[in-house]
Structure formats: structure tokens, C-alpha cells
Length: 408
Image (cartoon, rainbow, N blue to C red; front, side, top):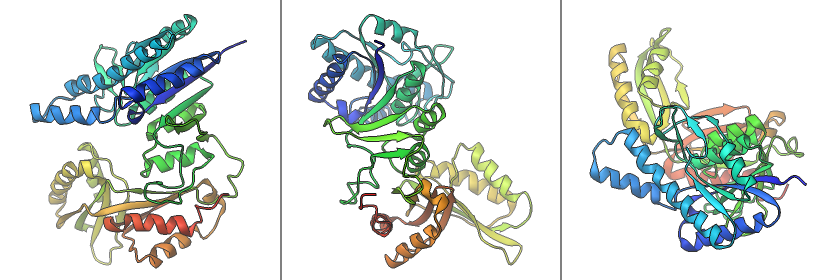
């Protein structure tokens, strides 16, 4: 009988210390005893990456991206080797591989490299030898032999890409929560775990602030239709399946509520209102390497207008510098920044076939005395930019308004 192939990914909190590593090893060995081939992708132990970044900051004011990748990749190598030792202690043969030993070939973009291909031969050979394969996530290598990392949450991407490369039957994502919830259960006590959610919905939620999975990993899973099972490494409870479509997709308008407190707003005042100006502004911002999200341009009754847009707070300094420079060239007015904003969003594939969702959202926020500064929509989501100190209150109000605490 052909063995099932399972890829498991364990996050940093799941391997945060020796006891947790031993517990993960026990779970892996229980699968191995069920005639299953297992490849495990592991993150760095909890806080390791942040500690390494902090240490680098004490050593150098502006370390190169190449050396930072070389440094940060070591975190996953530590946890993968320790986990392989723990598995072997339980009588199961295992082998730890770095990302590049596992065949991850990436482009040259240090810190945010993209996986170009994976040569799974070494892993398949290890399967034939009866071994569990433990792969260091978050990393790969260029064709020139340079170590790269895949960006924050990159171990999720490592796991999904590996599942595609070795034709896994399922990819299990182990975290410190029991699945995907209607909203953050740490902020809303009656948040409800979802049995299943679509790739589109999960991608939208991840992009809008839900931190359970890296958005790029969802994109890959969707493209190749790789079933994902998000579950807890602390219990045997079934988690949430992320799949192509769900049976109740037409019945549920809103699946979840997210918030993102990591954005800032830039406003250019008195911008000349003529063709080509917006293109010049956003080309300049893009060249500075800044990601722009929500954009609002006020209606002009004169020959001047205001343009506001949001950027990640981590890119605000670069964004302000680029915007001030282009504003001066265009003869625009002041450039203002606002760090005290947040984004709240509702997400659901069922929005396509339901009317009145936006009105219900705006009414719920109004009743909670939450003012809306900007609005952005997609086919399956509506987002509002609001005051930062109103974010948690807004999430609770929307969760209640759409009855997400009730089983559907």
C-alpha cells in the first residue's frame, strides 16, 4: 500500500524550549508509526529571530542584507537539528536539513526571497530509507550559493512549497492556537473556531491583519490546491481546513473580522489636480521600496486636491522621505503623517451574493462611535481606516453585528 505523504510545519512557540521540542517529537513519531512519510518544516525557537535582530543592531548600525540572512537562517538550523535529535531519541530515524540542503532555490532578494524551485530528490531518498526529514524553514539558497531568507512567516511558505514539490497529501500547520477563528480570540472571548475556510477568505484575512499564516503561503496553496490543516501543537483537537471551496459558501456573508495596527497614513495636501500627477507620486513611493495600500483622493472643486494613502509603519520613514521629495517637485503643499490609525476589516466569500453588508458594517461602527477615515473594498472584503485607540472596540462591535459568535 502506498504511504501517505504529510508535511508538518511547527512554529516558534511549538518548539520554544526542550520540553516543547520533545512533545513535538512525540507527535511526529506517532505519525511515523502509522505508515506515513513525514517531512517537517520548523521555525526558529520562540523569540530567537527577534533576539538575533536585536544583537545585530548592537553590533552594526546598518548591517548588510546578505549578512543578516546568514545570521537569521541560523535560528531555524538550531531548532531543526534539536528536533531531529529528539525524534532519533525515540527510536525513529531522522535527518535534519538546511533549506538549501533540502533543495530550496530562490532568487537574490535577501530578506524577502522568492522560491523559484525545489529539488525534492534528497527528501524522497530519505523517505525510502525510512527517515523522518526535518527541514529548516524560512530559508533557501541562490544559484550562486548565497543563503537567503523568505521574509517574516517564511516557514509557512517553506512548508507549502515543499508540500507541492513532494506531492504531499496534506500540509499541517501547527501553531499555539487550535485553528482559524472568526477574529482574534485573545481580544474577543466569544470568537468561534471555523471548521473550514476557503483559500480566498484566508488569503484576504491574512493580508488584512490575521497573523495565523503568511499570505504568500496561502497564495501558493491556492495556486496548486494544497489542502492546509491549521491546528494546535498543544492538543490533538481538530483544527481548521483551508480548502478551495466550502459547502456553505453561499449561506455565510461574513466569515471573520480582522484588525491591523501596523499601518500609518500619509497625506499630501494641495496637490495639483491634473493628469499624470498621481502616477508620479506613486512611482516615486514605489521606487523607494514602500508598499502602498488604501488610497483616497478628495474631490477637487478647485485646481488642488488632497491625496491620502496608507503604508506599513515600518516603511513610514522611507515613505515620508519619498513623498516629501516628489511633493516639492510637483509644487504641492504640506506632507502629513498619522501613526495613530488602524484598519478593521470584514471578510467573506458570501459577500458576492449578499446585499447590504457595507451598510451593516458602517451602521455597527457608527453605533460604537467609531469614525471612518478611509474605506477600501474588494470582492470579498470591506476595510475601514479608523483611529488606533478604537480598533479593539470596533472589532468587537463588528463581530457582534454579524453574529459571528453563533454557529452557522
